[in-house]
Length: 82
Length: 186
Image (tube, rainbow over all chains, first blue to last red; front, side, top):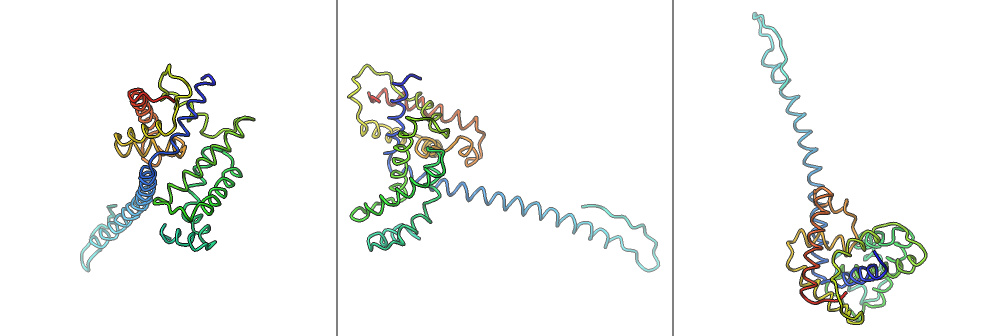
């Protein structure tokens, strides 16, 4: 890129500095919204992970309770992972 | 604190106006300055200078969009400082890359150099930005006003960097066509 092109690119870059305020506000609002959405995704994914873990543990406990031996009956205890 | 409350502090000449402004906008202003200057000390100084300029301007000015008002001051100060420094050396950051990208948008022209008028170019850019879809427009503003790196825009929009690059490339080409059609001289 020769010096003339550099100067023109610089001029254009400077002109971007005077774009309408509404566009800057829109970008700012989108910036905040996408950051908020990204935080929600992290929280949601963590909750899903924790929930899946809780369901798994609950499933194991429930299966064990179902297979608990009763008085006079011989049963084989088995544990199924939900 | 809401903008109108901060502006009321400016009008009352309460120095807490500066602190509140820095609390609300300091981070964003610093990032914009940093993208241009790539130097922590220079970026912090530009933000401080921008807050001082705001203090001097308000009142009588009461900007309708305070965030945009501050962003423009900061950007201009950062560019001035970058130009002063770039005469000595280039210090990294996004500026060299940004300028090389904007080469795509420079209309070929046989017109005289002194036919360049900044307001004409800016008006044409604003008209062009109106034609874009919101996500494209926001990405373009983040890149060419705030100087956001491609990777940050990609992360923000949950896109790949190559997709962002392609999108910006297509927009630059469209801007070139628009500027040529409008007979704009850069």
